[in-house]
Length: 527
Image: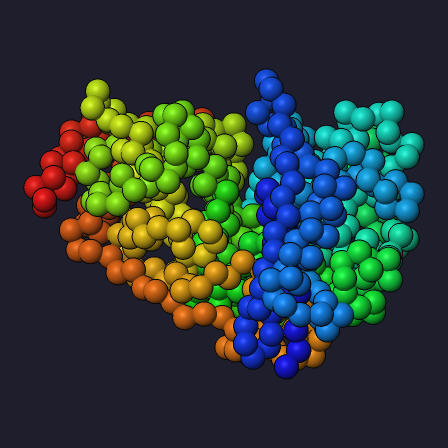
């Protein structure tokens, strides 16, 4: 059976896993790289392309050593990355600056301007981005770079998503016309709608700012799904990685979308990829847009279905920030909440600490908590924040269901659900449904599946999933906890709208704090 490499670029490291089509994962290796932040500018988050490629070489070497194989036996390589993680490039696709990392929010002004202009002009493509264009999206980030780097504009050739630049570099592609463009990244993050002619028209872009004039023609290349090839591994990078030149590399994708494939997603499933942020993924036979959702893109997750992406701007980052403020470790706080019951903290926590990605799409929102008392601890806040992420996820799932997306199974994937049981019990109670968690690590499994398709080992995604995806552990809701969450969710939903929109209807809050006290007392009475 063939061996392939699945490459997953995360927020702080790249992981390479080598898989055998029959035996599964043979070995893995990681390489780290820093996130560049700036004091006084919480919106700034950037990374170096050179750091990424150095880390890839390190991770591949470690994976080959861990697997105990000759790297020249690897038959294909596939890459997923964070997104929208964007870099402007010059001649030969050389980066002109650091990447705008996915969580960089510097472009919030540009995103607001794009949204307003699209709404005023009736630009139909905005509906496929949920009705609001976000600072996390690629077109906003390119707009910000062009606006704030006028001295660099003469050198600007095009801009690339991280997944597309890495694929191009590994394939030895330097001509912008030959660049592979992932329709996953372009559809979800650039307002690229295939049925509407691709990117927004030139008159719309140039009307936003003269800096965007001509950009549409510069975002050229081969737009394709991940069942198509980006190219083959060039000799230079084959030598650096210890692989064989000429092996196929499919068009790349965004990490959460392939994480969903690795978690076994099928029609009727929702996969919550819970890591630094949360991506809520589904596939559908319909490509009708859904208000407030970060894109409905045919072929973006599974080549044969429309991919639906939503999510939260912070999850793991939020939990880490609570621990950091308390001067504690997240591991210690997580152990402290192991026996917590739903509602017992008497807190209701809105989780907008890094803004709202879905449904409101507002990066300016900030977190809030109700019910504080002198005895509350950081562990209490952590548990309430986990409940808050689950409540917000339920809001997203209900919006999907309202627009015809069936939710028959909920799968929690990503790093956090496998590290502890608490968050999965919380989600089961809040959603009032069983939550499935893969029994084994699925990081980079999705990329490996597309590498196997490129190598011809499996004919379909489903065939590869059946052979490689792990079984699940199931977390059932408990009746008392689920009933408490149902009552608290009514409050959360009201607050979500009332505090998240300036034009919202007033909500009476006089009964909120007594309700939180009652839920805490009821949970305490259960022992």
